[in-house]
Amino acid sequence: MDLSILIITYNSAPLIGGLLRHLQVEISNPTFPWKAEVVLLDNGSGDGTADLVATQYSWVKLVPNTVNLGFAAGNNLAAQSASGRYLLLLNPDAVPAAGALAHGIALMYSHPKAGMAGGELRNTRGEREPSARMFPTLRDEIFTMSGLAAKYPHSRTFARMDRRWADPDADAAVDWIPGAFVFLPRKVFHALGGFDERFFMYYEEVDLCRRLQCNGYAVLYWPCLKAVHIGGASARTVKNTRVSRTGSQLESWRMRSAMLYYRKHHGLTGAIGWMAIEWGWHRLRGLRAALRHQADKASDMQAHCAQLSQAWAETRAGSESPVKPW
Image (cartoon, rainbow, N blue to C red; front, side):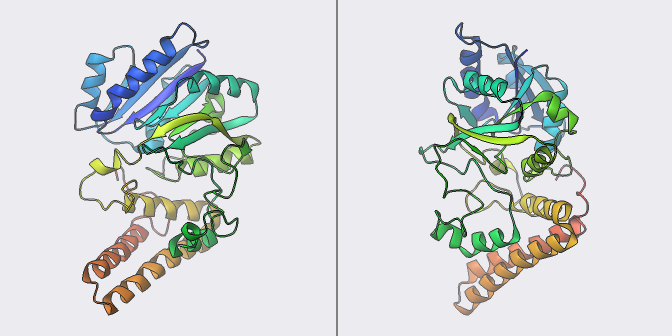
C-alpha cells in the first residue's frame, strides 16, 4: 500500500459525502498509479456522520469513536489502522485538486528526507490561505494582534509568521504547514510517537514539525499540490464556545494549545510572555472601547480576557492539558 488517507470527522455529515466521492474517483481511476486506502475516524459526531459512512461508503475503513478525541489523538489512532507507506492527513472540509494525490505520492517517494509536505490551500473564493508558515514567536504575536502583519502583509518583519512575503508559487523548505492537507511517511510518524496528544486541537502540527526537524527531517511546501479548504466547518458545530472572528477557530481551544506550546518549547517565561501579550492587548482594547461608549465591544474584550484567565488556570500555566474532551 502506497498511501493511507486519514480523515478525522466531527459533525461532518454535510461535507463528507462529497469528499469521499471525490477521493473514490481519484484512487479508483485506472490511470492512478498507486495503491491507496481511506481510513476515517469519527470523533463521536452527533449528526450521524459515522452511520452515513458505514452505510453508503463501505469501501472506507471506518473507525468510530463515542467521544471526541481531538485532532491529535484522533490521527494517532487512525494511523494505527493504516498500512500505507505514506499518510495523507486530510480535513473533511479540504478537497484535493484532481491529480494532487498521485503527484504528492510521487514527490514523497523522490524526497526521502521529507518528514512532512503540503501544498497550496485556497478558500472557496479562490483566495490563497497561509499554507507554509514560520514558527511563532512572541514578537510575531505582537505584530499579528496589533494589526501590523495585516497592514504590511509582504513585510519580512511584520508578517514573518505567515510567509506572505515569499513567492507562493515556489517550492520551499519551511518551518511548518497546516495539517489540513499534508503527506508524511508513516514510519517516521510512528517513530516520533505521532502527535503530542496534549494538544487537543491547534498547534499539534507546529509541535510535530519542530520535532521532525530536530530529528533531521525536512518540512516542505509544494505549491503544485492544491486543495480547496473551507475551514472551520467542524468548529462551528461546537456549542457554548466562542469562535474567532474569522469563524475558523474555537477561542478557548486555541488559547489552551498556545499556552501548552509556548510552555513546552519556550519554558515558563514563554508561556507568561504569550499570556501577557494577549491579555494585555485585549484589556487595552476593552478599556478604549469603554471610553468610547462601545459597550458591545468592551463586553467582548472582557469576555476574551476572562477566557484567557480560565485557560491559564486550566492548563496550569501551560504545564498540563485539561481533561479531554475539551
